[in-house]
Length: 247
Ligand SMILES: C[S@@+](CC[C@H](N)C(=O)[O-])C[C@H]1O[C@@H](n2cnc3c(N)ncnc32)[C@H](O)[C@@H]1O
Image (cartoon, rainbow, N blue to C red; front, side, top):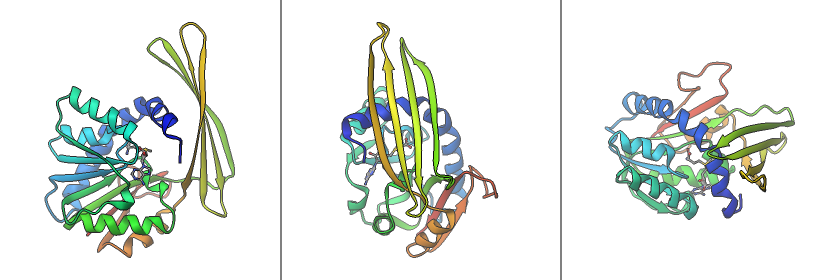
């Protein structure tokens, strides 16, 4: 897990790209609420909500949303954004593995590959807690990427302006095929207008799942499970998948 202090800076640095995509994602998710959920969706729990990018978009569309995240620093940013927009969202600090809600939500979401934090055993705990927290006919939605098992990737360099600062991100993705682990490393360099540089490393270990593995794991806990592709039905070359599971 990434150290807390760097965590918030790391996600701030990816925020703009994430915000650009989120409207399309929530359009897709609302389609899933209509097509796949077996009850009307009004109350949503957004697990691993981070700084609230999808949480707030759901709230803007009139859903009653609770966001939960492990890191208080992320929630501080999320609460500030909600306040600025006068959106009423409850943000709570907690571990997705320790939630003890009982049939309180019509939908539970987990966006932006957050499901990759959970390994073979903790993902079972997660699915079980999610099932308890959902009302009958409620829906669980989580997206996750395809990672090729090609070994070393990158580095990929992003160089962009943020106000009067320059932000240079250098990403490496190292895959361990035998263990289906992804080591994500990012060097963040912030170049100030006076030329001074603030730099730090972020290092995270994530779990790789294929769509079939996720489906088989989820089928142990949910009545109906479907895998979608990149904001549509699954196609052979899709590189992002959406797990949709109904209680
Ligand atoms: C990739 S970010 C996704 C943030 C947000 N869902 C989004 O779409 O922008 C992953 C988030 O998962 C949170 N997280 C990781 N493990 C968690 C856990 N066990 N319980 C709750 N949150 C967790 C991290 O704090 C981080 O905010």
